[in-house]
Length: 567
Image (cartoon, rainbow, N blue to C red; front, side, top):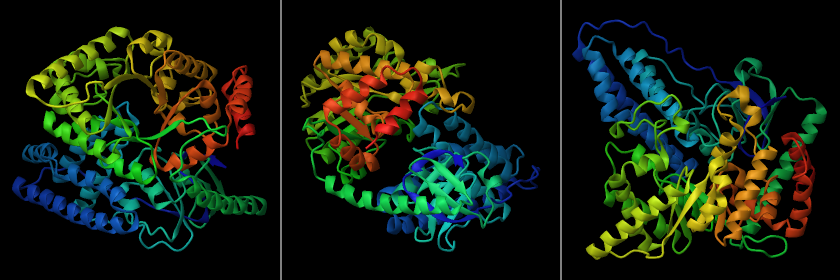
């Protein structure tokens, strides 16, 4: 049995089809005519865009317009003026088109791959996808075609790029297994939209699985079984049937309030990365937005977005959510996110460097543009402002002072806004956890960012396989930190939410209910399942389990107890 990232739920049983990627190697050489080489490159871009647009149209039919929009990023990277200028300049300097394309896209790939935020790291796959498409055309090679697979195929591939996923015939694909990728990758998102079980980041799987092998893929637990025995097949066929029945049963929770088994109301909201994601979240029956990552507005722009551009994006989400709460995180960018027009300097340790609120407070005029846009949007819905990476109380006070300056300027302009707009903070550092009582006195709400809190608490990079065993929400140190944060927030009478992956962890939900968490912000596809699990726990039962859990000494012990108690 192999284990990886549980990227798309469900059980898939079928025959392995190991997809062989094309050989895109080439020998760099100096072209005889730079003009002809530029034309080759331009023609490759045109062809790539035509093929991508065709894929988008197919995806609109197979997975819907929202998931199809993901492929728009490929066109953006292919058409990007900065990349085009870089490629053409390299050709003029004596490079062939293949080398110029490869070096330009490698630079952008490394930029995204080294970012801290997983959502942005996953954009590296989009860059690689565009590079592959352009090189394949320049070299006259065919890319992997997954459109003509036989029934009950289990796709096994090194990296499932969005363009590959776009061509999949979902009726013939039982499951997907890859050697790379995470839950927030575009491929994972599309796999979930297609409702195909998927396990990603399984080491050396293309070497260990051969085409024709019988494979079971447990996308819910991240497990892959090759050439199973009769007992395994019987067990997992029963699980597949049970999963299908449970999924159908989840529809009973659509349109219902999110309440515990004893009737206590909690808020179940969604994490989104751009305004269009609000439509997907709403379709999945969310009760608002618990985290809108505003970085996409800046990452996708060639210059700083204007106040009106930002306002339009925030207003769109506010109107879509009507009177439901929308928490928007202010710009979380820094040395690990190389946005060219921001001229950020390289840092040895960008994760603990000049980023997020530190960057924003050192660029107050720029920050006020975003805060003003957020204030303007608050006239159209329940917008709340969230500050990232806070480590001391002065940062909160400085941001609140800037908000007041923006309010005064809007008053002078005669522009309406919510004068009582709430300003809160993400709690994602040990420092913030330790002073949660002081921060609660200054903030209107907390939202716990478990993805970073786990990493900073355990001093473990989740992307580093050698220390991955430490990156675990079940670590007693992490649980104690969560307990303190939630208790201090509730003691101060403010809302405490959680917007990290742990908020949708079915094993952890009773513990979070016991701690007193009153807002769960999860990915859209997790909403109905999370609502069901919350409904199955009373406060008394959750407290009894949590009391035992908090006495345990290791993450393994904690997880085992939670698995035994799972409902």
